Image (tube, rainbow, N blue to C red; front, side, top):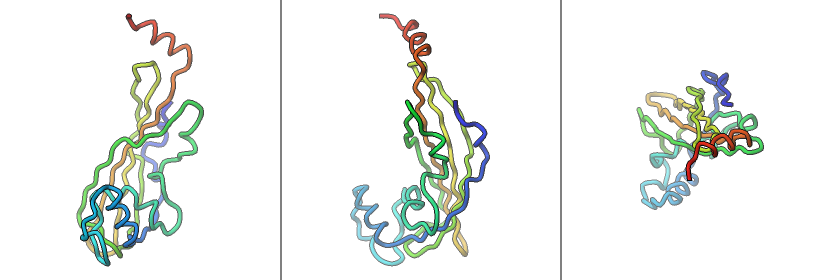
Length: 160
């Protein structure tokens, strides 16, 4: 069952430093070796804010602000569902950003096998001193296996 009590929770604030090495490595990992991503003041690749909390964190970070320990368990898997970014100013190497993550939506969908998919949508608002900000939105999907009774029920609805 989805942890609907998480909806609306602010999951904390963290600071990150955007460093030249991780930006270059990320660009190469996504198949974009353009020299524009090298050097001081270089812009970050468009989807880089998704990994900022893992690289360059000045304190705790990671996992998009979700309580991963509560979402794991037997028969469960966590998948990255989608991401979107809204830039008011493009982040670049050397920026020190502060991000606040909020869980903005929690919902479930039925799986065809009788199990459920749980969706946890987070938004992180990254701000820097001075003008501009970047807002990132990410959806993580938790897959929950159905119990045997639900699987038998789903199987009985199938026709050969």
